[in-house]
Amino acid sequence: MTPKVNNSNNIQTPKPMAQTKKPEQYKVKQGDTISTVAKNMGFTVEQFQALTGVTTLKTGTVLKFKMDEVPEHRGLMALAQKYNMDFTEFCKLNKIPAPYREYNPKKGEKFYIINGLGKSANKTPSTANKPAPTAKPNPKPATTKSTQAKPKRVAQTPHKAAKPKPQAPMTEGEKALHETAMAGARVISNVVKWGSGYTPEEIAKGLNKSANDHWGAVEKADFQEMLKQINPKNASAVIKAYKKISPNESLINTITSEIRSSKDARKNAVMYIYDSLAKEKNIPQGVRAKFKANLDKEFDKWVGMVDTTQMDKTINSMLAKPSVTSTATSKTSSKNTTRVPYNGTQVTLTKSGKVFTVSDLQRGAIASGKKEALENFEKFCKKNNIKFDENMLDLAPIERYPAPVVKNGKIVAAETALLRPTSKPNGKVVVLNPGHGGYSSRNGCFDPGSYSFIKKGNGKYAPLLEYAKMKEYSDDLTEKLRAQGYAVVIAGGHAQTMSDQNTITNVISKLNSGQKSGQKYSKSDIVMVSLHADSQPGSSGSGICYDSKFADDTKLQACLNKHLNQDSWIKATPAERRWGENGIQVLHQSEQNPSVLLEVEYVNGNKSQNLDSRDYRTRYTNKVVASLNEHFKK
Image (cartoon, rainbow, N blue to C red):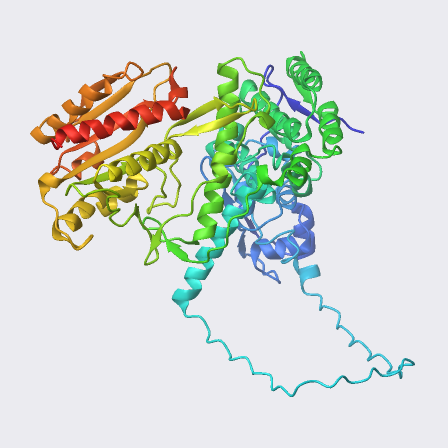
C-alpha cells in the first residue's frame, strides 16, 4: 500500500512546476490534417475538434482554442466545475503534473476547456454520439391455470363505493408554500436525526467542494461552517459519505493536504473529527492520546511530510464499532426523541415568509434545546470540576417545551382571558408577564430565557430554565391575587413577538375599553408586573426595575422594595431603567400604568437554588401581594 503523504507546513516542499505558456491558437499549414496536428499538440482528435470547433482544415486558417483563466481567489477545481469538467480529465487535458491539487496557477495563466469533459452525461464525441441500445420489450409471462381451488365468495352487504373526488391541482402559490413547508420539515428532521440541519452527504460534499475551491481551505469560512456541522450524531456517516465522494483520499488526508492552511488549524480540524467520532463510538481516552501522538509525530517529522495511513486505520477501526448514540437512542428513546402530538396547523414566519407546521416548530425547539443543553452542561461540568457524563443530565424540562400559540397562521403571544377574583372583587387588575417561554414570530425560535443547571435529589442535574420557573411564580401569584380580590390577565411570550405585536399595550387597551371582559377598568385600576430571573455568574439577590420618569412606577417600586426586604431571605435592590437609555420593552409598553419588572433571583448565581425552592417562592409571592395591597391601599 502506498502511504498517503502531505506537506506538514514545517518545510517548504517543491511545488509542481509551472508550465510553459500554452498555445492559444494555431495557423493551419499545407499538408496539415486534424489527426497529425492533434497528435503533435498532445490532444485526441475529439479533443482537438471540441477545442477548435472545426471538423476540416483549410490552409492558412487561424484556429483559436477555447481557453479560460482560473476565477480570482479560487483553484483549478473551480475552473473545472465552471465548465462541468471532470477534474482529473481537466488536468490531463492541460498536462498538469500530479498531484493536481497542489498545482498553483500563475496569474493570467490560461487553460484549455471542453464543456462536460469526462462527465457521464456529456462524453467526448467518440462515445457521446453512439446510439443507445434499443431495449427489448419484456416477453409476457405465459399464463398458467392455477391448481388451487377458487376461494368461495363471501356474501357482503350491498355497498356502492364512493368514487374519490379528483383533487384540484395546486396553484403556484400553494406549490411554493408546500415546498417551503417541506424544506423546513426536512431541516428539522435532520436536526433531530443528525444533530445538524444538513445531511451527512451534504456536509461531505460541502467539505469536498471547499477543499477543491480554495488553497488553504481549512481556514476558509465555508469549510469551517461545514466542519462545525460534524457532531457525535453524524460523525461516522459524514466520514463514510466523504469516502464515497473521494475514494482515493480520506477526509483527514484532505485536511492535512491543505498546506496553505496553518499547521495548528489542520491539526485542530483532524482532532475535532476524531473527538466527534470517539464520542459517538464511546472510545476510551487512551486511544485519543495515541492518535494525537501519531498526528503530532507526522507533522513534526523533519522531512515535512504527513502520512495519514496509521490514523486512517484508527478511524476505520472506530467506524467498525457500534455507535453508542444510536444504541442509547434505541434503549432510551425518551432522552433523544420526544413524541409531540401532531398539529398540522401551518405557521408563516414574518421575517422569512417560510411555512412550518406547529408540530415542526415544537419538535425543532425541543431538538435544538436538547443539543444546546448538552453543550452547556459539558461547559458547566468543566467549570465546576464535575466529570461530564451526558447520562447525568435530566432533559425532561426541555421535553416539556410547549407548542407555539398560533392565530390566523402567525405566531402570537400567549394571553389569558380575564381571570376573575375567587373572593370579593376589589375592582383592580394585575397584568402578569412571566418572562420568556414563547416562539419568535419572526424566525420560529423558542426562547427559554436564561438557564443553568441544578442538582436534583436523584443525583442527576436538570436545566434550571427561566421561563419555566417564572411560570411557576406567575401561577402561584395569580392564585394568591385572585384570593385577595384581584382580577388577573397573564400575557407572555418571546420578546420579539411581544414587541412586534405590542402585546401588553393591547391588553391594557382592551381592559380600558371593556373589550377584555365587558367591564371597563381605568388607568388607576391596572398595574403590570413582569417576572424574570437575572443572569450573572456568581451574583445573587432580587432586582426591581422601573422607569423613574413616572411617579406611579416609582411608588410601586417603593412598595415592593419595602416589603421584599422585610424578609431576611430576600435581598431586593431597585434599578432605574429609563426608556431611551437602558429601558425595557415591556415597561415601555405599559408606560400609562404603574409597572415594574422583577428579577426574582440570578438563575446562574451563587443562590440560584432559591429559584427551585418552593419555600422561597411562597415567601416571595406573599411579599409581592402585600406590596400591591399597599400600593392600592387596600
